[in-house]
Length: 177
Image (tube, rainbow, N blue to C red; front, side, top):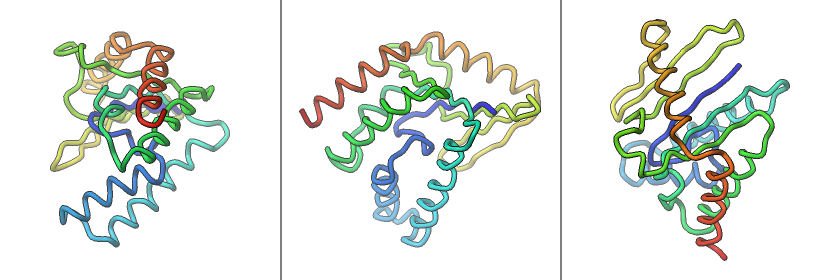
């Protein structure tokens, strides 16, 4: 199984620390978008989804994060520092690839919304994309091929994993030296 992620603005849920995720849901509660109970449910479900990364064999995860994900402060300096540490650790796993799509990609960035592409054990594909109002699951290969092509172009344009980790580590040092 392979998971390909592209995210804008915030670190994708699968890669979030508990404190980072709690800060995000706390913001949603303060805005009145969700209740405290819904926030607790989301954190619980997130923990369950993250456990899938620990199974054997672990799924291969390719994550391309827009630069805004690593630059947007969430939860205060300590929370953000721990989140950046988590991303650097994730990049070191044998079943992961982490890249940052820098701001200077401009119009060459392949996606304007978050996208998740999953290769299932039978080698079929499923895509999930969401906007502010809804999520959509797609299995039609006509659409999936263009999404996969765009994802591969994004990976080619994004910083290498080494350059991405170097950026993350520098940002981490700037938060709490």
